[in-house]
Image 1 (tube, helix red, strand yellow):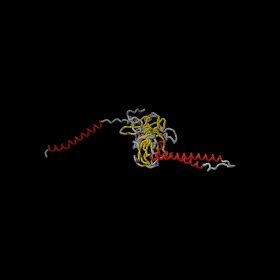
Image 2 (tube, rainbow, N blue to C red):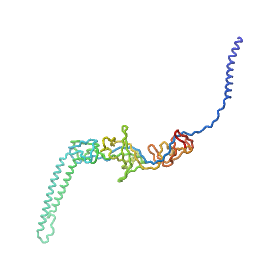
Image 3 (cartoon, rainbow, N blue to C red):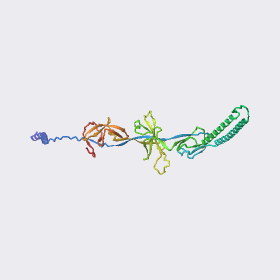
Image 4 (cartoon, one colour):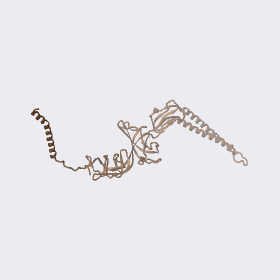
Length: 398
């Protein structure tokens, strides 16, 4: 091996080692020349929360429920005499409307007209018999008075024809009763609406033979409708419910329904409570009364909707005045009936409150809060009293 070759090989491994040593020395020099970072004290900005002010205002109990519409009155019309239907009204169809006293249908009256004629004839005959007996009794008394006998005493009842006179009077009374019965039967051949109503169903039609007692149709009142509403027992304390026989007015109610995006409303009042608790649901039931549910007499152009039987409606009941209360979102109440507040030092405060009433979306608080305090809505894990707080943009700390 020549000297040149030996030198070349020697440089091949010495050169990388020198480069590595130089790199290490340079790195050490850079590290020594770098200044240590300044130590800064960490600032606690506080937990970011959202708050709303506590507002005290006058509140009224508002009860939200649902109910089903039914007629306030409904009766089944039955035949009181036998016969075939000889005439029916054109409105004698399901859904047909009748005013009180309107004739709905008629049973063939001819047999009952003849019965009235016979009773009238019997009455005339009884009148004639009574008149005859009365005159004969008077003749018998006069003849007795003309007889001159010593100590003849008083005439007997048979002598004066008193039994015959009583029998004639009884026959006349029976004849008068027969006339009244015949007139009543004749009147019963015309079946009339007992009140303003709507025909819900019918079981007969023209030409059919009916017997006394047979149900013929069902008619429901159109003057008023009832909405039957189940409520929790705790809601009853806030309502004005008239007692039986009382003239007091019940709580006012608003009923509504949505149909194709259009909202329809009706006004009503509580008329009564059912006075019993459903054993399954443990709910009480009240009845709400609505006047003129079918809007009879309203102009056709009115944008309204009849409150028809069977509708399921939304009910809002205005209950008792509750006084000055704070209304909070349900989410603001924490476990144990406490709320979180931001105090004057922007620190978290945990405070118990008393919930007077729980409504559909809000809570009404009567104890534990003052107007102007800041209620925390944000959920915080590991919450503790005195935690520092900061507020979302738009909220000004005190």
